[in-house]
Image (cartoon, rainbow, N blue to C red; front, side, top):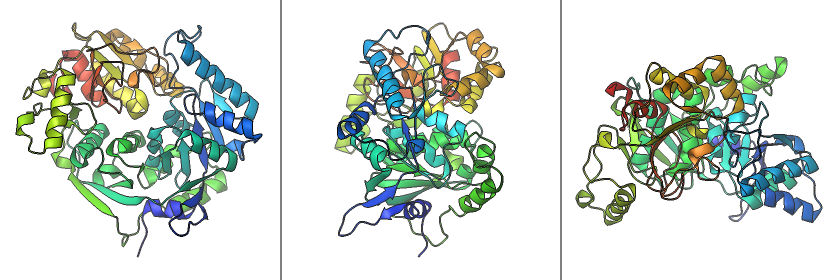
Length: 467
């Protein structure tokens, strides 16, 4: 029997195979670090008198707690300032390369690494952050880990893991005009649920997936976690190789040729069997928007908010009631009638250059609706910000009435100054819409950059077609 992409990468990294139900010991090629989940790991090494096993395979950045304005001034949040200064002190002491706030390569941990060419096919990549699955877009096995595991990888460059189950998500056919990667992944999560991928590594396959750019593929893999999966992967191909060639940490010359030769072997065998398979017809997809308080509570933008009394499953019915109440919606109301006051375009899901180009193309020549309180456009990395400014996208955003910010996690989560207040409603290109995710009592609708931009123009949830 053949093997899947995930199984091949796993097998290539086994240091010791577990026996009698014990986990395997895997070698880790790269660990990404940031200010939130690293302090305890550094302290653990310090107390044990250890140094990192392979410091050149660790790299850190500042992202979660960073302000996105006035970065040259003292951080107004004492807790955030402490976490950032602690990371800087720890990285200096242990010799870990760090891209701090203000550095040209600083950015969200899952955005700066691919741009530098650090993320490559066939690698094992870990980070103390659930959205590490983003890097699976390159054919890497990339998973989020806990703080104690961060310390273990620093000390040993290995990690104990039990093999995951495998799932194939096939998106067959061609996407309709105006449907993006964000719509694909929201539709997948709506179909299988937030626990549908639990215990699995998802491999995204099919014609619609193969035609996506690398930026779009990263969006898909990023939200694998919202489906309950441990990781998401897409087999590397010419699109992958073209993206990586010439980047600072990509192989060169003869090593490039050897790398590509290996990378081309990283695909699921024709006779491989997945534990689970799911198929979507790309032609049936529309722009998707979440109406509730988890990423699985999403519907096509042309649909109506569910009526709980019409839901037969008691658990889902009660969840819908709670979500609708928290979100301040009326059962059965058209999603397009929902008015928002805040628009957030950014995050490790949709803050890459392609996302900003999409939003700018829609906003150009328009101005934000009077009812929109604020529009934040936050690039996922400083390199993305510099590229956007070279292309003049920042001027389009400013003319539109949006705030053009520095790179960081920003309003994706309420862990920095970019927070929302109770009952404030956003359309957000981020990845989570849990209660209070963007600030205590805040209400979040997840959508693509195109839908977010159109909504900013009209004031109610809209698609570009509505313009």
